[in-house]
Structure formats: structure tokens, C-alpha cells
Length: 251
Image (tube, rainbow, N blue to C red):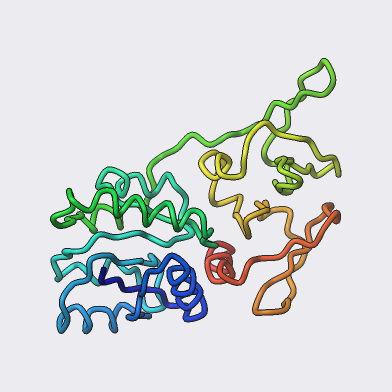
């Protein structure tokens, strides 16, 4: 199986390569920009499978395929929310949200292998998908959460929530009043329900509200530490793989 990785952050590309090696999959070719990828596709046979990051250092990766007919299956590696990736699902294309989880990676590869007999070629309208990402589909995001407190239900508006986090297999919200409440949901489900301009998933355990950020400081291994207005129960760290997307989100 011929596989390439297109990812502008070289440490992330090498990490994905190591994860694939654990699955006995060899991805020898790694490309890091739109320009480099275009040159490569013009001079090489298309691979069977591409692991494709959406946001590259010199533009969106879809620009690679504007003048090239793609003949490969694609697994997207991205920080974009699921609502903006509906078109990929329609084309039997899988995607992995960063930071990539080893178990999810294995599932995506198995999904590709299972569908291999039906995959003659993959044709996507990349222009339509670009529009989805720039002008996302209108979605109704949650404006409030109902929390059971004893025999009572308490309504909490999203603007009154500093962060969501997972701990001991539970999912919690933390309010601007300094209270935390257990939710009957997961961070994965919240990914679809939270307004993406307000909430960002900084790592596998945390969503933060942009309006609750008090300070940001450099942290070890090219990460960022976030100081929230009230939440101080544990360190809030932006994963290294998410720092670039986080900085873009802030703007």
C-alpha cells in the first residue's frame, strides 16, 4: 500500500508516521506545503491513500487538487469541526480530529481497507468543500444546558460557561461563578453542539470559552498554558498539535 502524508508541521507528520508504523504501515513520503505537494503530484504516481491536513503553511490543501485530478483515497487530519466535514462523509472519506488518537487512526485505516474493493478512484468537488470551510453551514448550536441538581433542573447559558473538561470518565462544565457540573454527554458530542467561534478544543480533555481567557503563556514543548478567569482546578494546556489552529482561532 502506497501512502503519503501531507502535513505542514513536521513533528506532527513524524508522529503520524510512527503511529502508522505501529500498524505495520509504511508511509515514507511526507509533504509539507501546497507548493511542494503540487510539484510532487505532477511528477509521481498517485498513492493509494493520502493523510491530508487541511490547513498548510502556504494555504488550504484543497489548492493542490484544483488542477490535478485526484485518484487516491483520503483520510483528512484536521482540527475543523465535524459540521464542516459533512461533505467528506458523503464521499466515504474519513477524517481524524487532532490531536490524533491511535485507536481512531486504526479504525480509519481499517475502514479504508474494508472499502478498498469498492474504491476505484475518489472524486471530490474541492471548491464546494472550501466554501463549506470558509462559510460553514448554518447550524443551531446549544445556547444552554440543563443540569440536574438533586430533584431540580438548573439551566446554564453557554456564555456563563468558562470551559468543558473530562475527568475520571466524566464530562463536566465549569461556570463563571466557579461551580462545576457533571454532564450526560462526551466531549466528542460537544464538538458538534458548541459554537466554534466561542469554544475551542485545546486538547483531548478541554474546551475553553474565548471570553474566559485571562492570560496565555509559553509552556514546555512548544505548548501554551491558558489562565482562565475562575477555573484553577488543574493546568489548562494547549496541545502542541493544536497551537497553530488555536492561534488562528483567536484571531
